Length: 436
Ligand code: GDP
Ligand code: IMO
Ligand code: MG
Image (tube, rainbow, N blue to C red):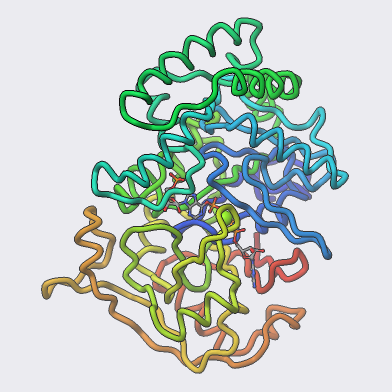
Protein backbone atom coordinates (compact mmCIF):
# COMPACT_ATOMS: atom_id res chain seq x y z
CA UNK A 1 0.00 0.00 0.00
CA UNK A 2 1.33 3.44 -0.91
CA UNK A 3 2.12 5.74 1.97
CA UNK A 4 3.18 3.29 4.68
CA UNK A 5 1.39 0.87 6.96
CA UNK A 6 0.14 3.46 9.41
CA UNK A 7 -2.47 4.77 7.00
CA UNK A 8 -5.94 3.62 6.07
CA UNK A 9 -6.09 2.12 2.57
CA UNK A 10 -8.24 4.92 1.21
CA UNK A 11 -5.70 7.62 2.07
CA UNK A 12 -3.13 9.08 -0.29
CA UNK A 13 0.54 9.32 0.75
CA UNK A 14 1.65 12.79 1.78
CA UNK A 15 1.56 14.57 -1.55
CA UNK A 16 3.01 17.81 -2.79
CA UNK A 17 1.10 19.26 -5.71
CA UNK A 18 2.94 21.95 -7.62
CA UNK A 19 2.30 23.97 -10.74
CA UNK A 20 4.99 23.00 -13.24
CA UNK A 21 4.60 25.98 -15.61
CA UNK A 22 3.69 29.66 -15.03
CA UNK A 23 0.68 29.08 -12.77
CA UNK A 24 -3.00 28.42 -13.55
CA UNK A 25 -2.31 24.81 -14.51
CA UNK A 26 -5.54 23.67 -12.85
CA UNK A 27 -4.10 23.01 -9.39
CA UNK A 28 -7.37 23.90 -7.61
CA UNK A 29 -9.31 21.27 -9.51
CA UNK A 30 -6.74 18.54 -8.86
CA UNK A 31 -6.41 19.40 -5.15
CA UNK A 32 -10.19 19.21 -4.87
CA UNK A 33 -10.19 15.77 -6.53
CA UNK A 34 -7.42 14.43 -4.25
CA UNK A 35 -8.73 16.05 -1.07
CA UNK A 36 -11.32 13.33 -0.62
CA UNK A 37 -8.46 10.97 0.27
CA UNK A 38 -6.41 13.41 2.37
CA UNK A 39 -6.87 14.55 5.96
CA UNK A 40 -5.15 17.92 5.87
CA UNK A 41 -4.77 20.32 2.92
CA UNK A 42 -2.04 22.93 3.34
CA UNK A 43 -1.09 26.08 1.45
CA UNK A 44 2.57 26.91 2.15
CA UNK A 45 3.40 30.03 0.10
CA UNK A 46 1.95 32.93 -1.83
CA UNK A 47 -1.16 34.83 -0.94
CA UNK A 48 -4.24 36.15 -2.67
CA UNK A 49 -2.31 36.44 -5.94
CA UNK A 50 -3.46 32.83 -6.39
CA UNK A 51 -6.81 32.04 -7.97
CA UNK A 52 -7.69 28.35 -7.75
CA UNK A 53 -10.90 27.38 -9.52
CA UNK A 54 -13.07 24.42 -8.60
CA UNK A 55 -16.26 23.49 -10.42
CA UNK A 56 -18.74 21.20 -8.71
CA UNK A 57 -22.04 20.62 -10.48
CA UNK A 58 -23.23 24.05 -11.54
CA UNK A 59 -21.23 25.82 -8.83
CA UNK A 60 -17.91 27.54 -9.48
CA UNK A 61 -15.58 28.55 -6.67
CA UNK A 62 -12.42 30.63 -6.95
CA UNK A 63 -10.20 30.34 -3.88
CA UNK A 64 -7.38 32.77 -3.23
CA UNK A 65 -6.15 32.09 0.31
CA UNK A 66 -8.23 29.19 1.59
CA UNK A 67 -6.89 25.73 0.60
CA UNK A 68 -8.84 23.93 -2.12
CA UNK A 69 -9.78 21.11 0.27
CA UNK A 70 -12.38 23.31 1.94
CA UNK A 71 -15.28 22.09 -0.23
CA UNK A 72 -15.01 18.64 1.33
CA UNK A 73 -16.71 18.68 4.71
CA UNK A 74 -14.54 17.71 7.69
CA UNK A 75 -11.22 18.20 5.93
CA UNK A 76 -8.68 20.22 7.87
CA UNK A 77 -7.27 23.19 5.94
CA UNK A 78 -4.12 25.07 6.90
CA UNK A 79 -2.79 28.46 5.84
CA UNK A 80 0.88 27.88 6.53
CA UNK A 81 3.49 30.22 7.98
CA UNK A 82 5.08 30.74 4.53
CA UNK A 83 2.04 32.53 3.19
CA UNK A 84 1.36 36.24 3.19
CA UNK A 85 -2.21 36.87 4.26
CA UNK A 86 -4.31 39.90 3.48
CA UNK A 87 -6.67 39.78 6.47
CA UNK A 88 -9.38 41.78 4.70
CA UNK A 89 -9.26 39.44 1.70
CA UNK A 90 -9.39 36.38 3.97
CA UNK A 91 -12.46 37.70 5.79
CA UNK A 92 -14.17 38.39 2.45
CA UNK A 93 -13.33 34.89 1.19
CA UNK A 94 -14.60 33.19 4.35
CA UNK A 95 -17.79 35.26 4.30
CA UNK A 96 -18.42 34.33 0.70
CA UNK A 97 -17.88 30.64 1.42
CA UNK A 98 -20.16 30.78 4.45
CA UNK A 99 -22.80 32.49 2.30
CA UNK A 100 -22.61 29.51 -0.04
CA UNK A 101 -23.04 27.04 2.80
CA UNK A 102 -19.37 26.17 3.36
CA UNK A 103 -18.23 26.67 6.92
CA UNK A 104 -14.55 26.82 7.78
CA UNK A 105 -15.21 27.02 11.51
CA UNK A 106 -13.15 24.61 13.53
CA UNK A 107 -11.31 23.21 10.48
CA UNK A 108 -9.40 26.14 9.01
CA UNK A 109 -6.20 27.01 10.83
CA UNK A 110 -4.15 30.08 10.02
CA UNK A 111 -0.53 30.21 11.10
CA UNK A 112 0.28 32.82 13.72
CA UNK A 113 3.64 33.12 11.93
CA UNK A 114 2.12 33.94 8.52
CA UNK A 115 2.97 37.48 7.48
CA UNK A 116 0.34 40.12 6.84
CA UNK A 117 -0.35 41.86 3.59
CA UNK A 118 -1.36 45.32 4.77
CA UNK A 119 -3.09 48.06 2.78
CA UNK A 120 0.19 49.89 2.13
CA UNK A 121 1.67 46.77 0.54
CA UNK A 122 -1.07 46.85 -2.07
CA UNK A 123 -0.59 50.57 -2.67
CA UNK A 124 3.16 50.11 -3.04
CA UNK A 125 2.65 47.16 -5.40
CA UNK A 126 0.39 49.28 -7.63
CA UNK A 127 2.68 52.32 -7.45
CA UNK A 128 5.76 50.28 -8.37
CA UNK A 129 3.99 48.76 -11.35
CA UNK A 130 2.73 52.12 -12.59
CA UNK A 131 5.82 54.12 -11.81
CA UNK A 132 8.10 51.36 -13.00
CA UNK A 133 11.01 53.03 -11.18
CA UNK A 134 13.30 50.21 -12.18
CA UNK A 135 12.12 50.04 -15.78
CA UNK A 136 10.75 46.54 -15.09
CA UNK A 137 7.00 46.09 -15.20
CA UNK A 138 6.26 42.62 -13.96
CA UNK A 139 2.52 42.73 -14.43
CA UNK A 140 1.86 41.65 -10.84
CA UNK A 141 -1.60 40.85 -9.54
CA UNK A 142 -1.29 44.01 -7.37
CA UNK A 143 -2.28 42.04 -4.30
CA UNK A 144 0.68 43.42 -2.32
CA UNK A 145 2.64 40.16 -2.44
CA UNK A 146 6.09 41.52 -3.37
CA UNK A 147 6.08 44.41 -0.84
CA UNK A 148 4.82 42.09 1.96
CA UNK A 149 7.53 39.47 1.37
CA UNK A 150 10.10 42.28 1.05
CA UNK A 151 9.05 43.63 4.46
CA UNK A 152 9.23 40.12 5.89
CA UNK A 153 12.83 39.73 4.67
CA UNK A 154 13.70 43.22 5.87
CA UNK A 155 12.28 42.32 9.29
CA UNK A 156 9.80 45.17 9.16
CA UNK A 157 6.51 43.33 8.94
CA UNK A 158 3.73 42.22 11.26
CA UNK A 159 2.33 38.69 11.40
CA UNK A 160 -1.06 37.07 11.97
CA UNK A 161 -0.11 36.51 15.60
CA UNK A 162 0.38 40.27 16.01
CA UNK A 163 -2.94 41.04 14.33
CA UNK A 164 -4.99 39.00 16.77
CA UNK A 165 -2.90 39.99 19.78
CA UNK A 166 -4.27 42.47 22.31
CA UNK A 167 -1.26 44.74 21.70
CA UNK A 168 -2.14 45.03 18.02
CA UNK A 169 -3.70 48.52 17.82
CA UNK A 170 -0.64 50.27 19.26
CA UNK A 171 1.80 48.20 17.19
CA UNK A 172 -0.15 48.78 14.04
CA UNK A 173 -0.49 52.54 14.58
CA UNK A 174 3.27 52.78 14.99
CA UNK A 175 3.79 50.85 11.78
CA UNK A 176 1.21 52.84 9.93
CA UNK A 177 2.76 56.14 10.96
CA UNK A 178 6.22 55.09 9.88
CA UNK A 179 4.96 53.68 6.59
CA UNK A 180 2.85 56.77 5.81
CA UNK A 181 5.90 59.00 6.27
CA UNK A 182 7.93 56.75 3.98
CA UNK A 183 5.18 56.63 1.36
CA UNK A 184 4.76 60.39 1.42
CA UNK A 185 8.46 60.81 0.76
CA UNK A 186 8.25 58.57 -2.29
CA UNK A 187 5.04 60.18 -3.59
CA UNK A 188 2.81 57.12 -3.11
CA UNK A 189 -0.75 58.01 -2.07
CA UNK A 190 -1.02 57.35 1.65
CA UNK A 191 -3.86 55.33 3.11
CA UNK A 192 -6.39 56.85 5.48
CA UNK A 193 -5.16 55.73 8.94
CA UNK A 194 -8.37 55.73 10.98
CA UNK A 195 -10.31 53.70 8.47
CA UNK A 196 -7.47 51.20 8.05
CA UNK A 197 -7.09 50.66 11.77
CA UNK A 198 -10.81 50.16 12.14
CA UNK A 199 -11.04 47.67 9.28
CA UNK A 200 -8.08 45.71 10.58
CA UNK A 201 -9.48 45.64 14.10
CA UNK A 202 -12.72 44.17 12.75
CA UNK A 203 -10.81 41.61 10.67
CA UNK A 204 -8.76 40.69 13.77
CA UNK A 205 -11.94 39.95 15.71
CA UNK A 206 -13.29 37.79 12.91
CA UNK A 207 -10.06 35.88 12.34
CA UNK A 208 -8.93 35.37 15.96
CA UNK A 209 -10.56 31.91 16.31
CA UNK A 210 -8.75 30.64 13.23
CA UNK A 211 -5.23 31.74 14.21
CA UNK A 212 -3.03 29.20 15.91
CA UNK A 213 0.43 27.62 16.05
CA UNK A 214 0.13 25.57 12.86
CA UNK A 215 3.70 24.32 13.19
CA UNK A 216 2.68 22.29 16.24
CA UNK A 217 -0.63 21.32 14.68
CA UNK A 218 1.06 20.02 11.52
CA UNK A 219 3.80 18.22 13.45
CA UNK A 220 1.12 16.42 15.44
CA UNK A 221 -0.84 15.52 12.30
CA UNK A 222 2.34 14.28 10.63
CA UNK A 223 3.35 12.12 13.55
CA UNK A 224 -0.16 10.72 13.87
CA UNK A 225 0.12 9.51 10.25
CA UNK A 226 -2.52 11.84 8.86
CA UNK A 227 -2.50 12.16 5.10
CA UNK A 228 -1.14 15.57 4.11
CA UNK A 229 -1.77 17.31 0.81
CA UNK A 230 0.41 20.36 0.11
CA UNK A 231 -1.18 22.77 -2.34
CA UNK A 232 1.32 24.89 -4.24
CA UNK A 233 0.26 28.23 -5.65
CA UNK A 234 1.74 29.87 -8.77
CA UNK A 235 4.24 27.62 -10.55
CA UNK A 236 7.89 26.64 -10.83
CA UNK A 237 8.58 29.21 -13.55
CA UNK A 238 7.31 31.96 -11.21
CA UNK A 239 9.56 30.77 -8.36
CA UNK A 240 11.65 33.58 -6.89
CA UNK A 241 14.83 31.51 -7.21
CA UNK A 242 14.19 29.23 -10.19
CA UNK A 243 11.76 31.19 -12.32
CA UNK A 244 12.29 33.83 -14.98
CA UNK A 245 13.65 36.44 -12.56
CA UNK A 246 12.69 39.28 -12.20
CA UNK A 247 9.40 38.23 -13.85
CA UNK A 248 8.46 36.01 -10.93
CA UNK A 249 6.50 36.08 -7.72
CA UNK A 250 8.19 36.67 -4.36
CA UNK A 251 7.93 33.20 -2.85
CA UNK A 252 9.04 29.62 -3.56
CA UNK A 253 6.24 27.55 -5.08
CA UNK A 254 8.85 24.79 -5.66
CA UNK A 255 9.40 21.96 -3.16
CA UNK A 256 11.76 23.93 -0.91
CA UNK A 257 8.86 26.22 -0.03
CA UNK A 258 7.09 23.37 1.76
CA UNK A 259 9.69 23.09 4.53
CA UNK A 260 10.06 26.81 5.13
CA UNK A 261 6.35 27.39 4.69
CA UNK A 262 5.00 24.73 7.05
CA UNK A 263 7.65 23.76 9.59
CA UNK A 264 7.64 20.12 8.45
CA UNK A 265 10.79 18.18 7.54
CA UNK A 266 11.61 17.41 3.89
CA UNK A 267 10.89 13.74 4.44
CA UNK A 268 7.27 14.60 5.18
CA UNK A 269 6.80 14.80 1.41
CA UNK A 270 6.25 11.26 0.18
CA UNK A 271 5.20 12.01 -3.37
CA UNK A 272 5.37 14.94 -5.78
CA UNK A 273 2.69 15.56 -8.35
CA UNK A 274 3.44 18.18 -10.99
CA UNK A 275 0.44 19.81 -12.64
CA UNK A 276 0.87 20.60 -16.33
CA UNK A 277 -1.57 22.19 -18.70
CA UNK A 278 -1.56 20.31 -22.02
CA UNK A 279 -0.35 23.58 -23.55
CA UNK A 280 1.23 26.64 -21.88
CA UNK A 281 -0.13 29.92 -20.51
CA UNK A 282 1.37 32.87 -18.71
CA UNK A 283 -0.16 36.04 -17.20
CA UNK A 284 1.90 39.17 -16.83
CA UNK A 285 5.23 40.10 -18.42
CA UNK A 286 8.33 37.99 -18.98
CA UNK A 287 9.80 35.57 -21.51
CA UNK A 288 7.60 32.81 -22.90
CA UNK A 289 9.34 30.98 -25.77
CA UNK A 290 6.36 29.01 -27.11
CA UNK A 291 3.91 31.93 -27.00
CA UNK A 292 1.56 32.08 -30.01
CA UNK A 293 0.43 35.45 -31.22
CA UNK A 294 -1.64 33.98 -34.03
CA UNK A 295 -5.03 32.34 -34.56
CA UNK A 296 -3.99 29.21 -32.64
CA UNK A 297 -3.09 31.37 -29.61
CA UNK A 298 -6.50 33.05 -29.78
CA UNK A 299 -8.18 29.67 -30.20
CA UNK A 300 -6.48 28.32 -27.05
CA UNK A 301 -7.46 31.44 -25.08
CA UNK A 302 -11.08 31.22 -26.13
CA UNK A 303 -11.59 27.47 -25.98
CA UNK A 304 -9.57 27.20 -22.76
CA UNK A 305 -11.27 30.29 -21.27
CA UNK A 306 -7.84 31.63 -20.47
CA UNK A 307 -8.66 34.71 -18.45
CA UNK A 308 -7.11 35.23 -15.01
CA UNK A 309 -9.08 33.83 -12.06
CA UNK A 310 -7.76 36.65 -9.85
CA UNK A 311 -7.45 39.67 -12.13
CA UNK A 312 -9.50 38.68 -15.21
CA UNK A 313 -6.53 39.51 -17.46
CA UNK A 314 -6.29 37.54 -20.73
CA UNK A 315 -3.62 34.87 -20.39
CA UNK A 316 -0.89 34.58 -23.00
CA UNK A 317 -1.14 31.15 -24.66
CA UNK A 318 1.27 28.87 -26.50
CA UNK A 319 2.36 25.31 -27.27
CA UNK A 320 3.46 22.83 -24.64
CA UNK A 321 7.06 23.39 -23.59
CA UNK A 322 8.84 20.17 -22.64
CA UNK A 323 12.01 22.09 -21.66
CA UNK A 324 10.05 23.90 -18.94
CA UNK A 325 8.35 20.67 -17.82
CA UNK A 326 11.68 18.81 -17.67
CA UNK A 327 13.20 21.65 -15.62
CA UNK A 328 10.24 21.60 -13.20
CA UNK A 329 10.49 17.79 -12.88
CA UNK A 330 14.22 17.96 -12.19
CA UNK A 331 13.98 20.70 -9.56
CA UNK A 332 11.14 19.11 -7.65
CA UNK A 333 11.67 15.39 -8.16
CA UNK A 334 8.25 15.10 -9.77
CA UNK A 335 6.97 11.50 -9.50
CA UNK A 336 3.87 11.88 -11.67
CA UNK A 337 2.28 14.43 -13.93
CA UNK A 338 -1.29 15.55 -13.63
CA UNK A 339 -2.08 16.83 -17.14
CA UNK A 340 -5.04 19.17 -17.43
CA UNK A 341 -7.07 20.77 -20.20
CA UNK A 342 -6.35 18.11 -22.79
CA UNK A 343 -9.87 18.80 -24.13
CA UNK A 344 -8.82 22.31 -25.17
CA UNK A 345 -6.65 20.76 -27.91
CA UNK A 346 -9.48 18.52 -29.20
CA UNK A 347 -10.23 20.40 -32.41
CA UNK A 348 -6.71 21.11 -33.67
CA UNK A 349 -5.39 19.54 -36.92
CA UNK A 350 -1.88 19.26 -35.53
CA UNK A 351 -0.28 19.89 -32.16
CA UNK A 352 3.26 20.95 -31.36
CA UNK A 353 5.64 20.24 -28.51
CA UNK A 354 8.76 22.31 -27.89
CA UNK A 355 11.59 19.81 -27.30
CA UNK A 356 14.54 22.22 -26.97
CA UNK A 357 15.52 25.86 -27.58
CA UNK A 358 18.00 27.41 -29.94
CA UNK A 359 19.85 30.65 -29.33
CA UNK A 360 22.88 32.01 -31.21
CA UNK A 361 23.45 28.63 -32.79
CA UNK A 362 23.47 26.92 -29.41
CA UNK A 363 20.95 24.27 -28.38
CA UNK A 364 19.44 24.50 -24.88
CA UNK A 365 17.98 21.41 -23.24
CA UNK A 366 17.19 23.27 -20.03
CA UNK A 367 16.02 26.74 -19.02
CA UNK A 368 18.79 29.38 -19.05
CA UNK A 369 19.14 31.42 -15.85
CA UNK A 370 18.80 34.84 -17.40
CA UNK A 371 15.38 36.01 -18.54
CA UNK A 372 16.96 38.00 -21.35
CA UNK A 373 18.59 34.84 -22.70
CA UNK A 374 15.33 32.91 -22.50
CA UNK A 375 13.59 35.78 -24.31
CA UNK A 376 15.94 35.24 -27.26
CA UNK A 377 15.46 31.47 -27.36
CA UNK A 378 13.62 30.02 -30.33
CA UNK A 379 11.68 26.81 -29.73
CA UNK A 380 12.56 23.63 -31.60
CA UNK A 381 9.23 21.94 -32.30
CA UNK A 382 8.02 18.46 -32.95
CA UNK A 383 4.67 18.27 -34.71
CA UNK A 384 2.14 15.54 -34.00
CA UNK A 385 -1.26 14.86 -35.58
CA UNK A 386 -4.27 16.22 -33.69
CA UNK A 387 -7.14 13.88 -32.70
CA UNK A 388 -10.08 16.05 -33.72
CA UNK A 389 -12.39 14.13 -31.44
CA UNK A 390 -14.17 15.41 -28.33
CA UNK A 391 -12.47 13.91 -25.29
CA UNK A 392 -14.93 15.39 -22.79
CA UNK A 393 -17.52 12.63 -23.27
CA UNK A 394 -15.28 9.62 -22.69
CA UNK A 395 -15.61 7.48 -19.62
CA UNK A 396 -12.49 5.31 -19.71
CA UNK A 397 -8.85 6.15 -20.31
CA UNK A 398 -8.71 3.39 -22.94
CA UNK A 399 -11.28 5.33 -24.97
CA UNK A 400 -8.90 8.22 -25.57
CA UNK A 401 -8.25 8.75 -29.28
CA UNK A 402 -4.89 7.15 -30.26
CA UNK A 403 -3.45 10.52 -31.33
CA UNK A 404 -4.25 11.99 -27.90
CA UNK A 405 -2.55 8.99 -26.28
CA UNK A 406 0.46 9.50 -28.53
CA UNK A 407 0.63 13.17 -27.53
CA UNK A 408 0.55 12.31 -23.81
CA UNK A 409 3.07 9.48 -24.26
CA UNK A 410 5.47 11.83 -26.03
CA UNK A 411 5.07 14.45 -23.32
CA UNK A 412 5.96 11.87 -20.66
CA UNK A 413 8.82 10.43 -22.70
CA UNK A 414 10.38 13.86 -23.22
CA UNK A 415 10.18 14.68 -19.52
CA UNK A 416 10.96 11.24 -18.08
CA UNK A 417 7.92 11.36 -15.78
CA UNK A 418 4.86 9.08 -16.02
CA UNK A 419 1.27 10.26 -16.25
CA UNK A 420 -0.59 9.89 -12.95
CA UNK A 421 -3.75 11.83 -13.61
CA UNK A 422 -5.52 13.25 -16.62
CA UNK A 423 -8.07 16.04 -16.58
CA UNK A 424 -10.24 16.77 -19.60
CA UNK A 425 -12.83 19.19 -18.23
CA UNK A 426 -13.23 21.59 -15.30
CA UNK A 427 -15.50 19.36 -13.22
CA UNK A 428 -14.55 16.58 -10.79
CA UNK A 429 -15.96 13.82 -12.99
CA UNK A 430 -13.76 14.69 -15.96
CA UNK A 431 -10.67 13.13 -14.40
CA UNK A 432 -8.85 9.83 -14.83
CA UNK A 433 -6.53 8.53 -12.12
CA UNK A 434 -3.79 6.28 -13.42
CA UNK A 435 -2.10 4.44 -10.64
CA UNK A 436 -2.15 7.33 -8.15
P1 GDP B 1 -4.95 27.06 -10.78
O1 GDP B 1 -4.56 28.45 -10.42
O2 GDP B 1 -3.77 26.22 -11.13
O3 GDP B 1 -5.84 26.41 -9.77
O4 GDP B 1 -5.80 27.17 -12.13
P2 GDP B 1 -6.95 28.27 -12.44
O5 GDP B 1 -8.14 27.95 -11.66
O6 GDP B 1 -6.40 29.65 -12.34
O7 GDP B 1 -7.16 28.02 -13.99
C1 GDP B 1 -7.54 26.77 -14.50
C2 GDP B 1 -8.87 26.91 -15.26
O8 GDP B 1 -9.09 25.77 -16.05
C3 GDP B 1 -10.08 27.01 -14.35
O9 GDP B 1 -11.04 27.81 -14.95
C4 GDP B 1 -10.55 25.56 -14.25
O10 GDP B 1 -11.95 25.47 -13.97
C5 GDP B 1 -10.26 25.08 -15.62
N1 GDP B 1 -9.90 23.66 -15.76
C6 GDP B 1 -9.20 22.86 -14.91
N2 GDP B 1 -8.99 21.65 -15.46
C7 GDP B 1 -9.57 21.68 -16.69
C8 GDP B 1 -9.66 20.74 -17.76
O11 GDP B 1 -9.14 19.63 -17.71
N3 GDP B 1 -10.32 21.17 -18.89
C9 GDP B 1 -10.88 22.40 -19.00
N4 GDP B 1 -11.50 22.72 -20.13
N5 GDP B 1 -10.80 23.30 -18.00
C10 GDP B 1 -10.15 22.95 -16.87
P1 IMO C 1 -2.14 30.54 -9.28
O1 IMO C 1 -1.87 29.99 -7.91
C1 IMO C 1 -0.59 32.79 -12.66
C2 IMO C 1 2.10 36.14 -11.75
C3 IMO C 1 1.61 37.54 -12.04
C4 IMO C 1 2.95 38.22 -12.36
C5 IMO C 1 3.90 37.55 -11.37
C6 IMO C 1 4.14 38.34 -10.09
O2 IMO C 1 -3.55 30.86 -9.54
O3 IMO C 1 -1.53 29.65 -10.32
P2 IMO C 1 2.66 38.78 -7.93
O4 IMO C 1 1.31 39.40 -7.77
O5 IMO C 1 2.76 37.39 -7.42
O6 IMO C 1 3.76 39.66 -7.42
O7 IMO C 1 2.90 38.72 -9.52
O8 IMO C 1 3.33 36.29 -11.06
N1 IMO C 1 1.20 35.34 -10.87
C7 IMO C 1 0.43 34.32 -11.31
N2 IMO C 1 0.22 33.86 -12.57
N3 IMO C 1 -1.16 32.18 -11.61
C8 IMO C 1 -0.94 32.62 -10.35
O9 IMO C 1 -1.38 31.96 -9.27
C9 IMO C 1 -0.15 33.77 -10.15
N4 IMO C 1 0.26 34.46 -9.08
C10 IMO C 1 1.09 35.41 -9.53
O10 IMO C 1 0.72 37.56 -13.12
O11 IMO C 1 3.35 37.86 -13.66
MG1 MG D 1 -4.97 30.42 -10.96
